Length: 443
Image (cartoon, rainbow, N blue to C red):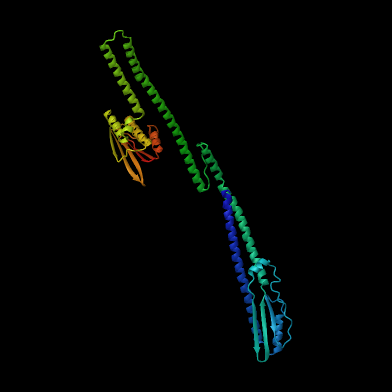
């Protein structure tokens, strides 16, 4: 069931409830009105009869004639009047056919019919016999009048509800029409069409959704572009590493092994090898073997520092930073740490190591700084152990438009997000750069 149908269904239920409550209120008031009208008419008639009898001659015949005249009136509204006198022969009273002449529907009559009203009054006079007057009320006329009024009100209310419901259905459909556009846009985003843009809508809520959608699409498009650049850069780095390794294997290992082979062949081809020649060849082979070992060790260190596995993250960082400081004259790195555990996850250790390594490379190549400060501390946040890594320098800083482009920063941010951490970079021109990273220990 669509949102439009659901809203109209709820509104229809509300209107029906309103109609029922209004009908109940109107009919309840109509019943009270009919009851009051009938009772007041009966009491008023009785009062007039009392006045008429008291002002008439005390002779019995005259009183009876007066009362008979009243009882024979056909146009007495709502009332049936009967006369009772044990000594007089009275005109036969009219048959009391209450609610027989009403034009209102039976259900309405049952709802508004008041309790039966019957008034009895005996007139005593020393000169005449006691005379009784019975007044019974017939609410038929009053019910007819009330029915015409109530029917008009109910019809008007019913027509209003129908028209209002139709108007609301059209209005809701008109204002919810942009939802289809939003859904089509989301379907496009699902298919990777991040260049989509929704128009402005007249409804404020939907217009805010449109603006947020456009912002989301722009962010996704930018992220897609950055991911493409990162992937391209990653492939370039891989190819560069492979090329460098191939070059080292060819230039260093290949030539050295060829030299060892040449020495071995020279020994083998020597017809009369002497001890001095053999010792010299052995020494040469040992030197070449040492060189091969150093080259292999350097290559393994570039691929993954062995100290990281042997002594842990902190020792590996200390060795790297000490070696880095030993090779620099114009820039110095301060390193401090506190309560860093040794049993960090492997992915977290290598990512933190590479982030700091990349930061030192950036500081050396781009910052023109004289000092770099690196601090790493463990803290507890909401019962979870986390590591706070802060990297600062006093260099030239970054331009606002190039804060996250180039310089290896997207790769650093990617490594942090891989470990469910947060990456925040702040920089001002000529005031250096500050990177603050928070990552959970257990990822």
